[in-house]
Length: 288
Image 1 (cartoon, rainbow, N blue to C red):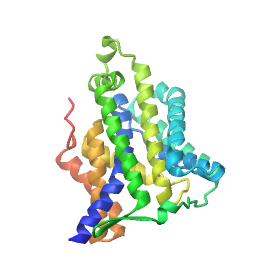
Image 2: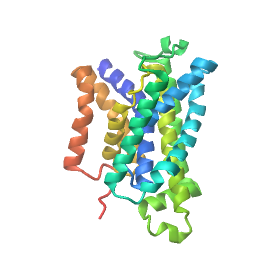
Image 3: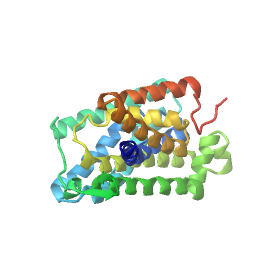
């Protein structure tokens, strides 16, 4: 029983970071109806930005993730204006090709600049543990969980209470009527895309101390982000956060009882089950 609860705790620690990634993708899709196949590549950009701050300026990753997230916000805004906006009203096929192409360009650019070497940040916090009774956790994972949880709660509060958040929800519900209510569609969409990319960058910075860094590190997280968004409900920010926690728990329990090699398979199993039995997701609603 102790092993079960320990696995649940580990799953929640990872799931909070997953929630941050999924909320970024859900925000982009909910406001723009664009499926961002470059989401994992932007996460990789956030990781490299945090790594550069650590390697060249000796800034701890748990501080460096903030300027890295700001960099990703500005970079995401530029990408939206230059590449996404021209295909915003085009077919979904064109949008998929564009975002896939952006992902490939980012990955190949990282390989040209940083080579294919595996890199890692060695900080003291990685080697420390936190114990609570019979349960233990890595101190770095606990800190990542606390920071990610603060961002998740802050984003939800922003979307629910702020005027910009209300505009985001209005466009998500009805993009045709929202401009008639005085909402600047282009400004809000560019902001939502940049914010979604920034969330991926922040998650990448928080993941950096726990992972080896290489140009293709974000590929798996694109798949995970889609699973979270589909699980919670397409376009639902709260649903994506819930989907991230569920995914983290599922992977941790699968690793405990079936082995690590089955942990990635559970992502696709959940994806197929949700699409088969509740396509709108847990928090989503069927669209006409």
